[in-house]
Length: 486
Image (cartoon, rainbow, N blue to C red; front, side, top):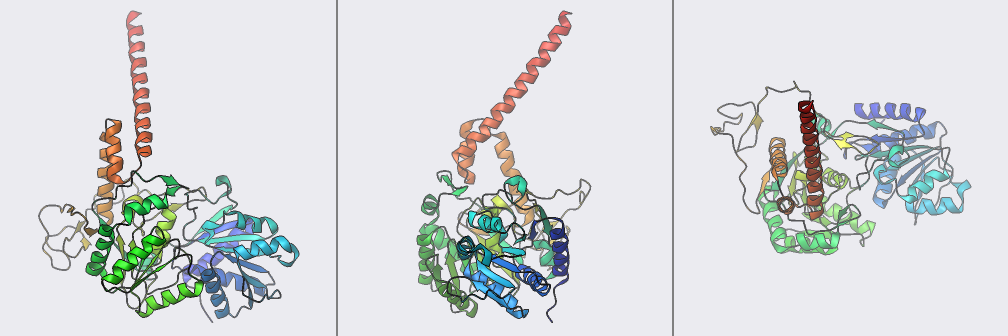
């Protein structure tokens, strides 16, 4: 008999409690934590009690993955997707949302369920999902996701225009790494950021065509080849690109360098994508470049490196992509993140703690004022080991007498630790605060890859703050003179 891990057992219990109190809820657990295992167990138990269950997903890979898990549990189930023979008698149905929304509109009486489970629930605000939920007014709804926020940053709760009432939080990425259920991401990022100031926004993210013109350049791709060889040569990797041409160019450059690679995109069939991932796992391929794919539903523990070549404003996409490489595997101890897009500086480290809410607010938890106030740490410049200050690191390397500064080398990736990221964030904020003119803010926008619109908004904030200060000062002197006149 298959047994759940302790945190999965706790998740099942919490989900049951949540759905006894509300109609629709969200279960949050990081990529690689076994969400399919958890909701598959729930579906099995529900079916044993006579409950009809519908599992919804938007990709064939997710549907097949859920089907395999149900088969492991011995759960008879049907697949509602083009190319599959219907099995309406089965208590559990795994369906493509695209197929399901068409069929439930034509024959709603044939598709009645008591429980709907939505895989990758952060996508469930799309109209197709809403139509299915609306067609099943008496069903309980459970969304499962690693990132409970829409791609545009909006929340999933009723207050944010969604339809979920409550959230259950599983363990964090950091906790799963400490448990040994995920591997540690080791991040290398550029000292100099891409200049994205001329790239317009479209749909809450960078315009893909303009973005590709900035990042799809031989110098950047050549740097990706060089750093892959230097940092993680031979490690199975995936590379995140902007569009099809960008992915094909990156694959061509890696192939020209003798690194077997392929580009995947939406025009490839599910079988072709499965074959590519199998080749990556076997070692036949070393790198699979993709665009608008592999963000969800890829279960390939052999992936040991993630090459980030696509800047994005979406924290959700950023975390989903890095999550592809965090699953443990006998042949890897860490996951290398080659962050050529500088996303670490915008979104933070993948394993840092975040506070998710149904309103879409995402913020780091603040430490108590007295927590760790007197604790200092040092980092070895040779092995990157972090430890309490001492003349020698635990590995025997002599430490420099002065605090090590970050070395800026054009085009060079370097490992980014939490301390370094925090230092860079403070330095950037100081520069923004000290800016005295709109031109200075525009220069900072170009430096950090922001748009001119960002500079104009920041300048507006500064102007309004200055006006409030001036108004307060004038009122103060007016009251002072009035008192003097009396």
